[in-house]
Length: 264
Image (cartoon, rainbow, N blue to C red):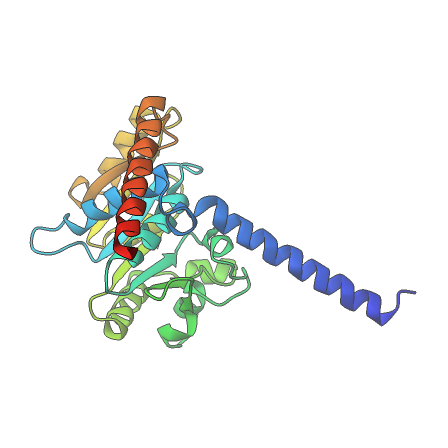
């Protein structure tokens, strides 16, 4: 029979391992947060700028990030875009994991799968503040998918999503809301949310997504709503990648020299 002290130490070690894995997940995928000077983070700054310039009168304030099929990188794009936007705009950014069948955003932000989230908001009469969580960035709030159950997933409806967006806007008037959803060709949730947002960003995995599947997805989503397509898993030419780092290495050197003159 194991002593009580053994089980306590075992639980503590297990907890530390889980926390370490969460941190590693974030550092591995959140380039915009942990590697802001990287080539990948720079691409998200470009996407961020395009989003802010996307509207005729003003930027799209509610966005849907989706893909045609699984494993195309929509969660990677939505999380890094949300971080990049939170770093540059003064308004609040709210990232919502609405991929109820296979949520993964909570792993990147170190929030347990058992936390209440979108499914809880849709199933119960609670305040939106009860399911919004702080992140590493002051301007970024995160809403996890919530507790998994078939009943909760069926509770997602247009009326409840409209109330969700309305409540968030009442809380933060000029905020940006980003939905990370499941694949369009497998789940109806993406189509439901696409009717409620200002714009849609479609993530495409180079070399995997067939042309006919992509065409079908664009037609399904209403082409007028798509403000851009992100090509993921691209092979970057070496000269472009190294040229980027040489450029910023020189910029950093100039900055250090200028700083030394200021000190003198």
